[in-house]
Length: 501
Image (cartoon, rainbow, N blue to C red):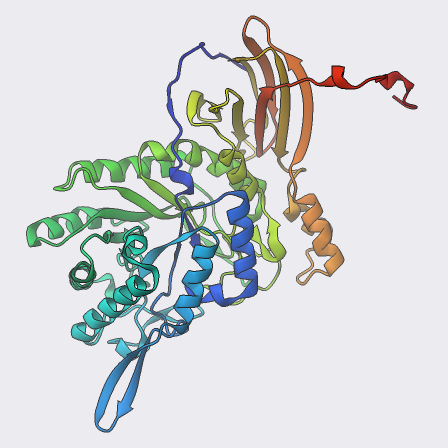
């Protein structure tokens, strides 16, 4: 058991909300589906992200770029029918787009190489003049529809993971730099106040960030922020329906955040903001770890500490409405989402809501606990215990002495672990039904809730003692607030007269 006494009137920092700045999404065309919008509304109600990032803005299924044959001429036509519906829906739900420019419209592509089930084209434009005009038309339309003040708040990221040849033909760095330069200059020509960045790398290739920033500096190319992705999965084992990974310890991701901060600090642009525009444990949408309580406990430290090093980090993704590896074949299939199909929250969803309850004032933090104070003096604590292997210690215990501003205290505890808030386990108990009945879905929703307990206690000499015991892959939230006791206002109150009391 670890004993911790928190000193009175000793604040060690501010807890930033970098963890909820942005969240990822399946390709943006999926936002036309009813369940996508319902899931986003659910996530926004309980967490409230500021931005949403998705692939496929310029993909054919959104239909922005079309061409018409008029006599011997081919004329571009910019069609905003679908993207207007999509962005209108986002803004109505209180979330702004973190605009990812990509992939290439087929009619403007220089090649046929594609990625994913939905065939996102990953080749450069066949005509950079047409590409430049397309980018200008898109930005002008956004401004005409939503206004300059609104669009100036949208970050624009150029492409996705160009250091990987699966996402950018031949992982051609000079060609990506050309694409970036043409694109950022087109955006800035429409409105110089729009923030643009890149290079959105993933899976190594850290020299890309150095090369990218040096290129921008030497060539006078605008850059307003740096982006990269972070995953902790080791090489995969593929099966027909699933992908399995061993994972690095979570320090691996924390160190990636630190490294990119040092890279930017030592670059010609030392003060640029850094956005991790994707992160998770596994990078594959068929990895069962995403559905487990372990994923929640494993990633909790990232939410606790990530904001020390980067300006934002975006969980990939908010929903299992996602089709990179084909249409999912079962309700639980290893999808990235915070929320499974039918709006069933996964353990990682509740971990996010626990952090959403934190105060700004940090009283104590270590690798497995965060203690904060809210503006009203109440205390919010989140603690976690990831058990990555059988060799790890299965339980973790704390005895906390916490300074409080009130004597009579109401304590509320929310818990998720292997047996609570774990619909994946119940789904297994059901026999892993691929297409659950309505009754089974309702059962999964019922068990997807955290275990809640409450009690009342008193402080002693301005401190309250809290004993915390964390089982395997547990994440727990404690909220300590002042009791406003009104028992005395009930005339004739006598609970002893209640049968069974």
